Length: 167
Image 1 (cartoon, rainbow, N blue to C red):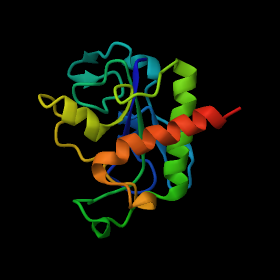
Image 2: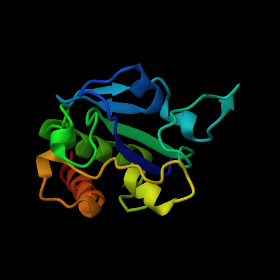
Image 3: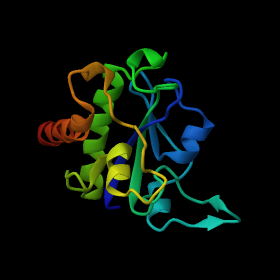
Image 4: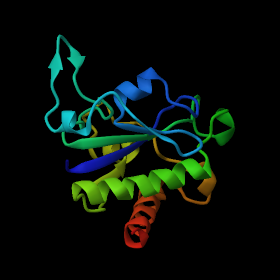
């Protein structure tokens, strides 16, 4: 695997079957990680059968070689935190940072803007894909001082911290 793409589910703070079908891992509001229906290895080379994905289809144009990790929440978010009844929690996003560090270590993925990124960042750098215009992750409710354009860098700093300070 060459990269990890981070998302929010745009649902409630707990996973549902759609979430489990599209992401390798989902993190609920309490920080509990649930594995999705597809193993990470299914995204080494993404294949479909009868127009049905046989892999975790989390990032249009970027699924091959990518691990999809999503934090549960942000339903109805359109640009203001008050839009959603399901904001991301501090416990949840910290677990996303630490778990991403664990995945980087396990798969030998370096922490760079090309290898650990948000769905938003992927879409920005791949404008001819269905990921263009995605807004996950452009806000971290526990860290509202972080500007949308700085969220990816903030996440990578936290992941690097967890890598440095893990046993």
